[in-house]
Image 1 (cartoon, helix red, strand yellow):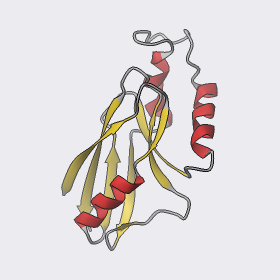
Image 2 (cartoon, one colour):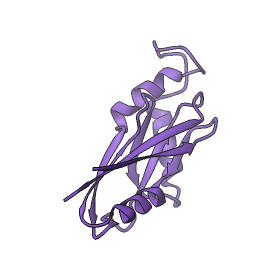
Image 3 (cartoon, helix red, strand yellow):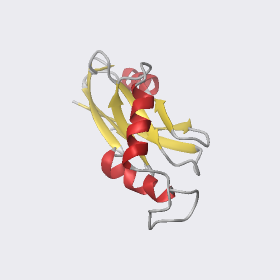
Length: 135
C-alpha cells in the first residue's frame, strides 16, 4: 500500500474544498488498478463526492447550515459559536471515501469531484491521507 498526506488550507471559514486534482495525481503516480482511500483524520471534517463549481458546493453548505445551525444549542460548546455542530458533521458527511482506480485514473462519474467538507472555522489547516491499494 502507498500512502501520502496532503495539506489543505481551508481558511477561517466554512469550506467545500476540491481535492480531486491531488487524488488524481496520487492515483496516477501509484499506477495500475486498485482502490484509493481518502481519509480526513479530523473530528470535525468530512469527504464528499459531489459536483463542484455549479453552485452545488454552496448548496451543500446551505443545507448543512440548515441541518446543523451555528448557534448555542450544542452541548459541545468550546471554540467559536456553534462549534459543536462541526463534531456532528462526520456522522453526516463521513471522514472517508474509497474510490476505484482503473489504469491509474479515478473512475469517477462525469460530474463527480472529491471534496473536503469543513465547517470548523477554528481550524484553518487540514490534512487528508491518501492511500492506494493495488488490485
